[in-house]
Image 1 (tube, rainbow, N blue to C red):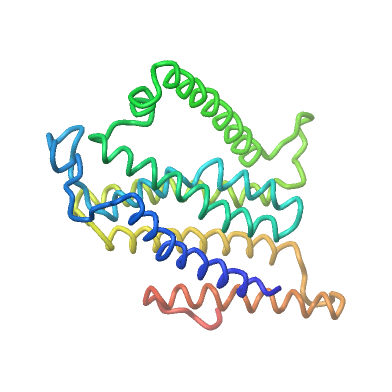
Image 2: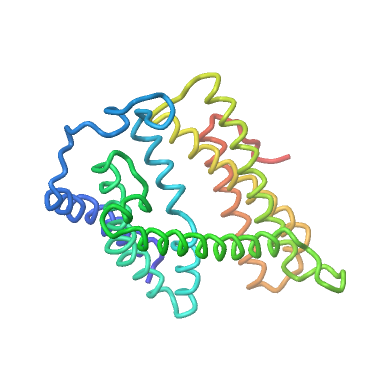
Length: 267
């Protein structure tokens, strides 16, 4: 199945679930959109601070884009593309989304209390202790897993001191990670100076993500162009490499044009 078709199907399913299933849950739970949240009722400038919805969404999105969506999809990929699609759609809609939605609404209905406090209120102190123990163990596993991934990505040498085969690929991934940190600092400085809010924050973030992708693409293509000859190669390989060059050229051209940067046709 064409990748674009899969992406479109997933987008339709997720949007439909948000509109239909999300609305059904909201009606079922009796959510009142006009009700004042704890941030408004108990505003103190420290623990309770009314915040723009886009900013709250960004925090929630960054919080959930962690171990479950990443490692779950990777594990499902061992069985093919269909389990990954089912994990993202069924798991995201009926497990991940409804869990987060319910946890947030329960917190809002109880003056912004955390899940540990809510469990103690409705189940008891033993339940709270067990929940916190689970959180502690789970955080330890997540930190260990991500630390191992980071170490494997940034380390270009094996135990014998020789460069590993995936060093160049890992270097590209490391480059993107470093650029994310650089752009985070730049975004913070821009935010401090201009006080962006709402959709403007999202637009700037998307711009930085696109720039990171293009920089990494140019870096990877530079290594490809130096290591893989086009002239003199087998005709089939030559055509494939030419197609790759044209594809990279079109992507970089489109991105630079989008940012109103003049692109030379030849040098």
